[in-house]
Length: 360
Ligand SMILES: C[S@@+](CC[C@H](N)C(=O)[O-])C[C@H]1O[C@@H](n2cnc3c(N)ncnc32)[C@H](O)[C@@H]1O
Image (cartoon, rainbow, N blue to C red):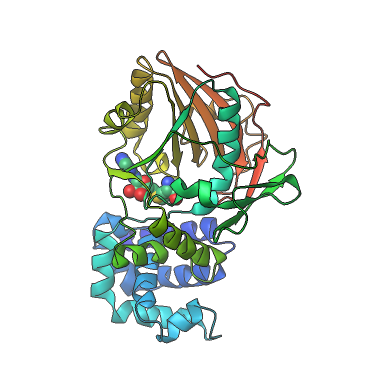
């Protein structure tokens, strides 16, 4: 292998080991593809958008969703015990040109509705401290599936449930340690809006298929995402195409001043480069000179600077999982509140948030 394809193979292996501990099929095929010199060379000679495992995995899954009788599709649906590794490698070689076009032309769109189980307790906290209506803007909303949280059933086991009984979308979240307040319903937002540089049009079957393709196969998340897509056809999310830094202020300005704007980012700021992360925070501080803002974030450690400065988030408590944070922007300053550690898809929450909060 060339130095470049060697480096790429190593990064594929590292990504697989960090991400696919509970997804054995993706672990196996990612490690196998990292050992395939021809594929690594082809990827290393392709645009950088393809230089990590998810674009390849999503593109293969996308083609399989359109070809349900392929032997690999049967393995993906757990209808066959065949070894996925040789099937996957053969599929990649056979469909390389088609796969490459998908890998370099589509963004990874992991619109994970399970994350709403992490947002809801944060919303309950915000509602308890706000003295006016709340308006919610989901930044990096993808297909807008998180915007449908009022229609989802969030199940926290013995600690209670949020949302309507009988919802076709149920997100189960294990509470680790002391529970947050679990409300029967999410706040009655005056507005629910989304912003995304590439919003997914759920009404377009190809886009809906790409959204499903970005979910790991053989995972209950696949059926849940499919159910959320159907629900979104009944309750279409309100999403605007635009950039988180360049277009957010204009969207905020569409919300009447009497509402307190709550922004969410869930696995969005992680995709910004360092300058864009700083520009995003600077923007929120600047807008807060005119009106206060609340940012609820679910991001990897190290992504939201305000949250990572919190005293609770020391190396002694850091366990490598995601951070739920709440940052209040008011008159140009940012005040962080660490809310807890969480599974990136919402499977569990270790709540560390305050019992109450006072918002401007
Ligand atoms: C991994 S997805 C997460 C989607 C959703 N927040 C969720 O948790 O399911 C990241 C999303 O952020 C969007 N995004 C990335 N950079 C952006 C930017 N600068 N402005 C607006 N949206 C952006 C992408 O298009 C994508 O839809």
